[in-house]
Image (cartoon, rainbow, N blue to C red):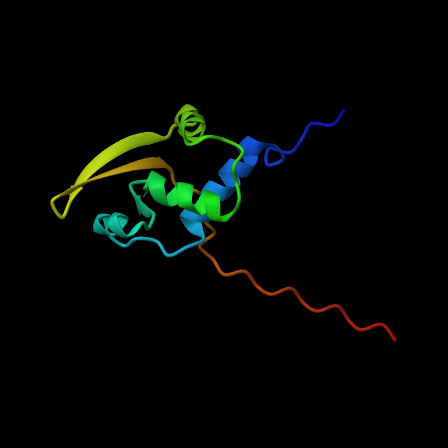
Length: 116
């Protein structure tokens, strides 16, 4: 039997969703924008609100884990829980080590010559 790729199981899919949530949308430029539900990168970590991530999972029909299980999985992988006072409001969020995001534009592949 062959080893399954890390993204083949539900946990792998959870990580793909988290990476897409954190990198595939508008990022916060400041910590204050966490209030708007945007992920915020700072100091090699990316911070996000659990309510927004749960909403993202629901919209992508990912229901393999309970919310409690999701954060147990993330905690085992080094996620940390934080509370910040932002605009006189206590904001609860999580952070994980930031994903490696390619910083260079990729060149478009050369088209193949048409066969006659």
